[in-house]
Image (cartoon, rainbow over all chains, first blue to last red; front, top):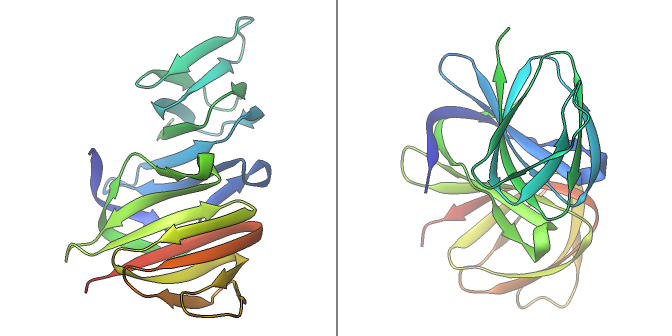
Length: 105
Length: 105
């Protein structure tokens, strides 16, 4: 059972798309941040500020990254990276559990 | 922005009711546990092992506690307690963000 240790967690959830996407923010000793989130089935578009490294903890998502013309499917254990200040699209067909790491610029 | 500090958090989510209820487990220095969770609208029934203290962080839920005949509505900032080894029912009409503390017996 993998854990993040000696971290802070923000009590309140981040809620998007009427709750179909929700996450909790985890803050590490070095002030870096990750969110642990759930996406229910649906089509979503997100914008980034910092670059993001997405890790699929369970489930799968099909993703259109900025500048790409091909949708790619990522499954449990896969990761993908999204550049800073960009937008990406997601199609989620089964519930997806994810960890998003924000990469300082 | 209230936080839990110097805690461990289990990376993978707990998923119930096809993802309509999800939570993350937070473990404190004294080994006590809380879960931070989201309930989407729906009707749910849960069983407890340890007694639970539920705090509504956002939204509301209408609850039938064990041995009660009257449903009660709890809103942001409210808490209610559920005895150990019991069952309780919930009706959620708007997305609810909650913190559940497990109370050692």
